[in-house]
Amino acid sequence: MSDDLSRLADDCWEAAASREPTYLRHLLGDYSAVDSYEGASRESDARFAATMRELARRAESIDEGTLDEQERITRSVVASYGSTSADLAATPLGDLRADPISGIQVDLPLVMGLLTVPDEAVAAQMPAKLDAVGVHLRETADRVREGAADGWVPAAYLVRETIAQIGAALATPLSDDQVVAAISLPDGIDDGAVREALRAAVERSVRPGLEAYRQALRDVLPQARPEEQCGLSWLEGGEATYAAALRYFTTTDKTAEEIHEIGLAQLAHLADEYRELGPEVVGSDDLDTIFDSLRSDPKLHYEHPDELVEDSRTALARAEAAMADWFEVVPRASCAVEGTEVGAKAFYFPPASDGSRGGTFFVNTSDTSAWGRFELESLAFHEGVPGHHLQLAIADELPASVPKLLKYAVNDAYAEGWGLYSERLADEMGLYSSALDRMGMFSADSLRACRLVVDTGIHAFGWSRQQAVDFMLSNSPLAEGICRPEADRYVCYPGQATSYMIGRLEIQRMRAEAEQRQGDRFDIRAFHSAVLDSGALPLDVLDRVVASRLG
Image 1 (cartoon, rainbow, N blue to C red):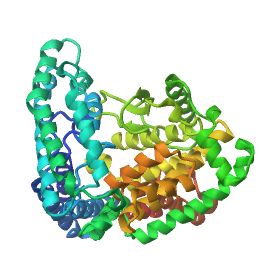
Image 2: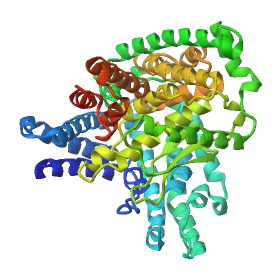
Image 3: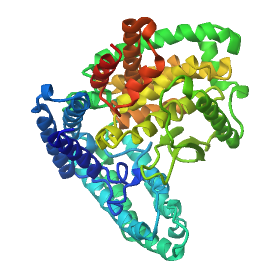
């Protein structure tokens, strides 16, 4: 790769990693910024937007005709990532800082528990990281007030729930602080002394920061929006902000209207699939009967937390045994399964680049009965193998010649599109163990199709929170206890939820076109290599790569 392009890719990665030192450095096993935490100020967003816009300009100024394939890919990724990241960072979206789903008051103990602390030197810097968390929280408080001054306030119910969560964290005795308890320290160091230093950092920085954040939320609560007006369309500039979010998260130019219609079409197709399989699973082809059975039949739900973890491990072992027939390359890094009582229902953290930690698929066991037995396998295949673990671990193990930006930068349309594609691929591979588990694949698809309709409904068409919940209840087997936090997630993270199905459909389209072009020459293993062996690509760039390699 030319020196100029290599330097450009490195600069783009450095800008992204500096903006997210915990997620794009420490979690990946890079200890160069252990004492840092993510910034939350308007000034940091503005600096990032200016940097990324300049990086995109530099990429676009390079003549593609002088580049080889890898260089063309790199140039296109920097141009796309730079421009969409800049556009999103330049919006007021960061002013809406009330998130009871995965806000810092919820996620901080989980994140701290995942950070590798390999030695005494890194352990000694962890109190400084907690001091930086305190800075982040104070900046967040400022951001809440700045947004409110400009009319950008969250929905009142989100503010109230976030205030309550912060209150619970502050009420916990310092000796039992969850953040301190979550940090895993290596053997051979003075655990007591380091824990005491961590508790001191929580007391002087984290808790005052949480208190400042809570007070800012209390101050803006009187002007917060009703839940009937929870979306961006109710805010001045909300339409442009949502368009920027959709471009960033889908890496396409699809409009809210187009995405909404795609979701409705997918739900209509899924209704036919449910009716076909329904008689075998629940004894009926009536859609409402099928949905009600999946929601409420106790025989179709888990009872014991240990079952969730064990069944996940069994499903992943079955998938790993089948990889050779479907993939030319499989990762060296292992994928563990662990239960947790915090965070989303299921989620994945990638392996550390230094090999200190493999990938981990987390299953939330806090409410075992909320888990349908039909749900688990599709989620295991999505989050583990052949889904996120396969994709992210392969990216991590790509040659050093592939820039870090392509290996590690967040690209939801690609990553979540691959995860959702993997759920259907698992069906082709014969991995689902029963018709009930195949029905779970449909249920997972219903959620992702509903997201296209509901996310756009909330933010482009003025839907209320209740409208969103009611739509999901009518068009999926999801229980209300799942639909309500899902709707809240879409309110808090506009556009992100659309990335799953848009990415999946685009990958499927690329595969269908490759099959048509190649006919008998088509090799599914080669197609998967074309999708996976250049790292995380914007969908238009991926389309060109697949077409070039499988022409």
